[in-house]
Length: 445
Image 1 (tube, rainbow, N blue to C red):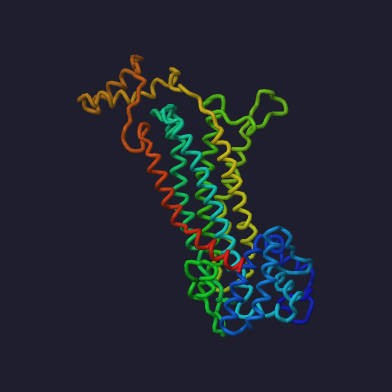
Image 2: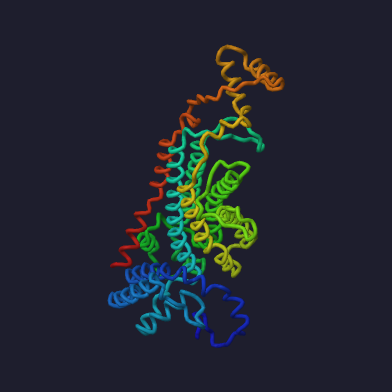
């Protein structure tokens, strides 16, 4: 099969296998985005006189059919075809003859893959953001449901002061708000149009880059064409940092849940269907799902480093090194989405143990409450601290198991509505509707 860059000579089949790598497999994830990008590009080409109106009409009609194939999962990259871009152009040429060969005017596979990756990534960031929002909602529901249920707080894995399940669930909810800010920043950096940068140095055709920017629903373009190409790898690395931030929150939650589910803690009980047994110990209900979530999220937290090491110290311009980023980057979204959905499922069904602090082993957890009570009644804080410490050493400390915390963010004032308002504010800042409307117009005509 002839290549887009064919110069009339054969290349070694092993060299071809090595250089193509997993591109054909991974490019299936980009197929619908490649088609949408081509629709915008040829609409612009017609506006500057490089396509006739009747040519644009038949090309758009055929591209819409290919798009439907890509969405339904019927699109294939044939044996011998290098990538998705080559396959789409081949399908158009088979159907329309020479008209199909005109769609590449004014662009390179360099800016074509840049565009495909941006369209893919902004779609995936929307899906991740939706899943983060769903997990956030489950955590907030559990926080409100269990705001009066006390549990031990720890420092250095030593019993410290009273906490609550309301605080515990709510803490992870608020962490996701910050993670969502990272996602929004990554989304804004992604939502810039590189099309028209060609091989990285622009084109002698009078391209209308603002037109393709508007047609594709981008906020604005990567203006400098050299910088557009320098964005390959940088965009993926920035997005990877945002994914890693979400993954860090989920991994920590998974670790807590595994710890609190163990018999020595017994603070929570995981749904039976989310645990597995032992081949020799009939009593075991292992938290395998959360253990795998933890491991997968830790793997995702390594992603920025992987991408950095692939792109590190490359000068400006395109290099084939960048192809390998797709292999670690594209699958990461589904991996994180799996973890988010599994976590939301378990959190919504997790049972907590009530009255944990009734157990005498936690009596000393109320020592700070006693110090504060004495200080509030007028005793200097250091004197109150010393009195309680001496009572504990003498075995005379008798706890008052009552907690009265009222300040913002404390056991008695979780501020969940304020945290929910923060999340909604961040969510509204994405402006997904602009993109959806732009793509809908292109696809439906």
